[in-house]
Structures are given as C-alpha cells and as structure tokens.
Image (cartoon, rainbow, N blue to C red; front, top):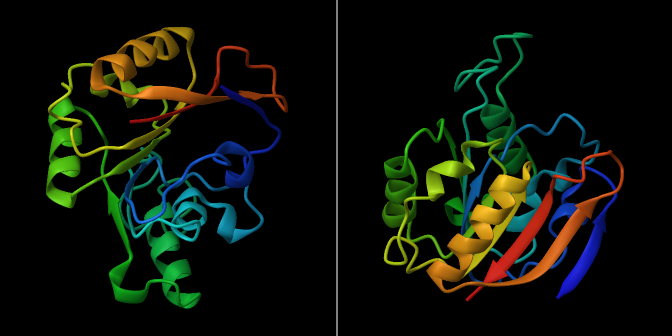
Length: 191
C-alpha cells in the first residue's frame, strides 16, 4: 500500500499515484479551484494532461449556476475551465467536456458512466459520494480506476466495502497534513 501526505490543495499532491494512460475520466467535482495559482493544478487539466484520453468534468457547485457564480458575478467554474482549455490550446479533438450538474441521485452517476464510456473516476463531491452506495458491480463494470476524496470516516468505511464489492483493490491512501482533518483523505483503487 502506498501512503502519501497531501500538503496542499494542488492536484500534484492529491492525485500523484493515478495511472490514467488512455482512460476516459469522469472528474466529479472538477471545479472549486480557488486555491490554485497554477491553472494546470485544477484536477481536470492536471489529470487530462497526465495521460487521460478524454476528460468529462462535472461540477454542480451550488454557489453558481452553469454560466455565472451567483456570489460574485464572475464566470462559473465550468465556464472558466472551458476558457482555460481553449486558451491553452489543450482541447484537441474535444478532449475536455465540462458539464454543470449536481449529482443528486445514483441515476445521475449511472447515466454519466454509461453514456460516456467511463473507465476512470475521480470523485470529490463534498458528501454526495453517497450516491455511489447503491451502484452495483455491473454499474461499475467499465470503470478500472477510482480516486476518491472523502471527508468522513463513514464515507471512508463504506467506500472500502464498495470497492471490494465492485472488484477494486485499494492501493494508495493519502492523508491531509496542511489542515487538521483526520477524518478526510484520498483513497486510490483499481481493478
């Protein structure tokens, strides 16, 4: 088991041990990049440029709608990410797709996975991960890699059970060292 420390909000610290080479990534919780000075540390861009073949970035931050953040009138995180990949010239062949959507039901997850040929998932959706609990091994059949940021011991314990049920092996765990949050961390699992 790989154990690592997460020392910042940067993706290089959160997701250092994921092999996404040739994978179609569903990045759940792709926004919320306020803490990143370097645009390439935002998870969809970092993971996309680390080998993913395609990235479907989904964020439904309730502070902002699909176009404008209600709290400051600035472009939403989804719109900002769309602009970045276009301006940087990295959206070749439509590699990046961004969707504003709240993950409120297990059906939301099933639809995203099946309609997009998802083979890898990165999930950081602030408690809405519980929508995965009813998904079956068949629902997760195409997924080979799963990266989870958890915020409670309950979610950690349930995902350990779900990973086993789905046929995944947890191979790495990261713990936050820059905040006092022993109940939070990252699990990486693969088939």
